[in-house]
Image (cartoon, rainbow, N blue to C red; front, side, top):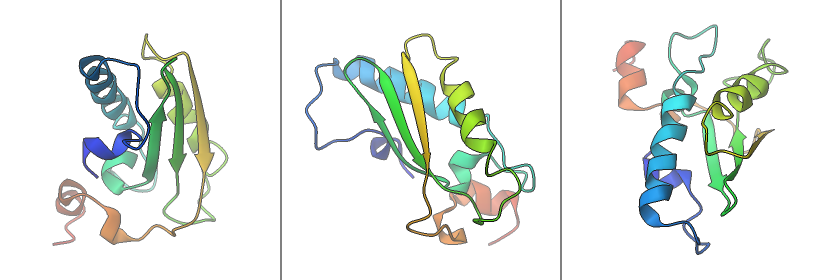
Amino acid sequence: MDDASLTDADNASALPQAELDALTDKLVEKLKTVFDPEIPVDIYELGLIYRVDVSDAKDVVIDMTLTAPGCPVAGDMPDWVRDAVLTIEDVKSCTVNLVFDPPWDPSLMSDEAKLELNMF
């Protein structure tokens, strides 16, 4: 996933582009601190983050999935993501939605994740 997909480009933002870019960088940094406990790769590189929207008021909404619907941390991981994002000083709130459409598959992983897991 490239950083441009982290914001909803279809909606005009009142936030200055430089400020939105800086916040996007911070969001990616924080998302990369959350790991699936069964896989030694962060959730961002695994492709578990489907959408991140940032409102003009700096409220963040994230759609994410899991590697499997029966993942043992399904009830906890959204809280881990929310808690990580809320450590960003500028963020006012964070809502994390767990979605399963489309289902996750290994093609969503970054090249970095595939290298880490020897999947090339």
